[in-house]
Amino acid sequence: MSETGLKYDFCDQMVADFEAVIENPIRSKTSKYYVGVDLGTACVVVAVLDENKRPVAGAYRYADVVRDGMVVDYIGAVQIVRELKQQIEEQLGIDDDVLIYAAGAIPPGTDGLDGGAVKNVIQGAGFECTAMLDEANAANNVLQMTNGAVVDIGGGTTGISILQDGEVVYIADEPTGGTHFSLVISGAYRMSFEEAELYKRDPKNHRELAPVLKPVIDKVSSIISTHIADFKVDELALVGGTCCFTGIEDVIEKRTGVKTRKPANPMFVTPLGIAMGCKHEDEL
Image (cartoon, rainbow, N blue to C red; front, side):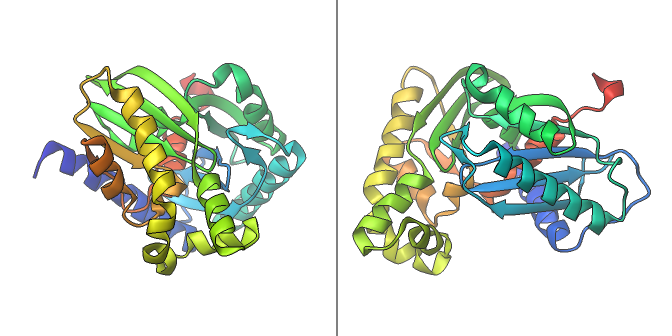
C-alpha cells in the first residue's frame, strides 16, 4: 500500500471511530480530555479525544450562527456549544469541570478578522481556549499530508492550504461553498433556503442534483486551479461538510487535472484535527 493510502487509512479510521462514539460514547477513567470546537457555517461540531488522542465522544448540531467564517450570532453560538458540552458530559458521566481545555479554528488567512470572536464563543461556553488553528492545518493533523493541498469546502468559503515537505507555504480563502449550493437548489426547485439545505444533505438526491450544481462545483474548481497554479501540487485532499456531496471529487479532479481524494466522511476531519491541536495547561 502506498504512503498516501496509509495516511488515508488513519484518517478514515479516526472518522469511523468518531462516528461510533457520537452514538456510543466511551466512558473511561481518564481525566485528561482534548476538545475541538468547529464552528461551521452550517454545522457546529464538538469532538472529544482521550489522553491518547483517540475519539471518546462527540456531538454536532446544524445551525446558522456563522456565515462565511464570521460569527453572526454570538449568543446563539455560545448556547449551542454549551449545550453540546453538557450533552457530552452527561454521556461520559463526568462533572462540568472535567472538560476544561478546548481548541478552535478559523478559515485560512482570517486570523486577524474573526479569531477573537471564535475564541470568545468557546470560552463563553465554559472552556479555556488553549489553541486557535487554521482550519486546513487542523484537517491536516488527521490527513497527515506532506505534499499537496488541503481544500476545505465549508458552508460559505473554500479554503486552500498548500503543503511542501509538511510545511504550509501558501493559504487562501474565497467565497463559494455549501451556501451557494443551497441557493442554486432553492432557485431551481422553487424551495425555501431551509428546504434546499435539507434536500442537499440527503445522498439520495445527489445524482439528480449533480447537473444542477455542476456550475458551482466548476467555480470551486476554478478557485482551486487559480491558487495552486504557481505550485507543484500532485494531490488535493477534500474536507468540509460540502464535500459530502457525492462525486464532487471526480468533478474537481477533472477540472483541475490534479488527483483528488476525500476521506470517507469529510465533515468530521477538521473538528478531529482541531481536537488533536488542543493543549492542556502543562503542555503550553
